Image (cartoon, rainbow, N blue to C red; front, side):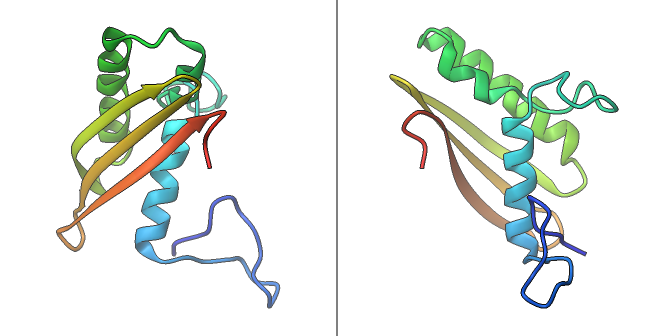
Length: 121
């Protein structure tokens, strides 16, 4: 069952559900925006991408974060997706993260973009 994140209820009062692809996107977003150590029972969960907006905008920092994000996605979603590529771009107070992955269940390739920071939509 694919539950909506954040958890909520639909118009009938039942637990809100979502499509499989939307659920996978929401799981990726959770990993990107959760900082390691933030979850008590899973201290290694997350990538800490939300911290990027406070870091100096350098090629080395973006490359390092790219590897950390790809590692976190592979660790936590190993049985759901195969991560093809991760691209991290910094622009002033906004960081743009593009994740290309293949859904293992359907062998369908998806590309999702996430923005973190002041200019995020």
